[in-house]
Length: 429
Image 1 (cartoon, rainbow, N blue to C red):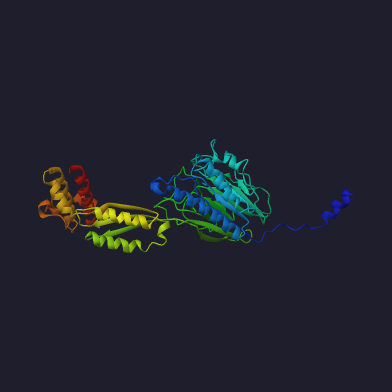
Image 2 (tube, rainbow, N blue to C red):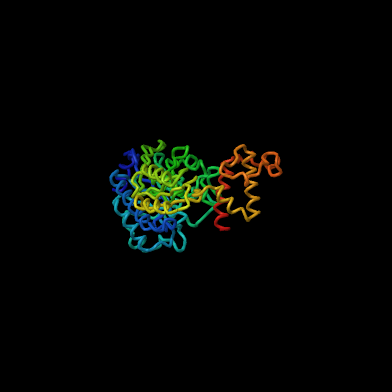
């Protein structure tokens, strides 16, 4: 009977598993549990937003009915976050069940001896749809797709993580290959040798249909159209270029270019507003109110306001009042007034330099530089400024070549005088 069945099977050509369309959500760098010490007053709001946005991402996955979700590293800020956070994250990931979620450890939460992925939340209490990629062994999330993981085992490495991919020597020619790694693309000037450098041609050289990366916090699609950073789902600071993003990806068949849609996901916005102001405090306040009025959804915005210029006043109460008003408008406000002069520079320097020859000499040197550049400092009294100019002993050919070579202009000198005034006033008063 066995031989009869065997002969029968050999006469039938079994159909190959050819997937016609695969869709998935690619995200990374949630960094749950981040301290947010820069904005300590609202740190708890920032941490809550990261979890809320993560939950929204899982809803997106369910609404779009994706085949699976990839989290390409740094799910947590570090391996020391509060244990409650590990259970909360596991619960969030379970909300898109039965869609499988694959989590890759990153350099913030590596698979070290103290790994957070060794806790009960990710062992005994692990939701059925959540899978921690603990080894480089390939995984098949759905038929016709092979996932190649490269889990991070240390805080830093000189080794390309894509070299850890275990590509089977024999596999179907129609099998879609997706790599998932955490590190820095080796773009000149944009990576460090010990920061998990990834070869620019890794995806094409390894025959990958898609390379899902984490580590960089901005959404980025490389030239090959297959290597992608999803970015962080929530921005992490004022220097972040991301507003919060994730990637929704569909691949029709083996070898076809993936269709990549950037999803806007951020709940909070971190914004830096730079304003050059001049005039009395009322004018400055009016200008600030006009500009900050353009910020959308201010109650969910963290704003860093950088003021530069002059606001002539001997009383700083207006600045405190402005700060108090902004606090009622924004989730967080930070005013940088290090380059804002509230009294004329010349008057302050003249007063401070009267009994300080060293300060007088510095002022004279800076004035010479400004004169040589053809734009003397307007706010500096004549009795503080040297008339030497380009032919003086201060501005010799060597110094002039230096100034020209570095593109130093009169505005730079004026700013140096402003900083000098602030420092001198603090030290000498």
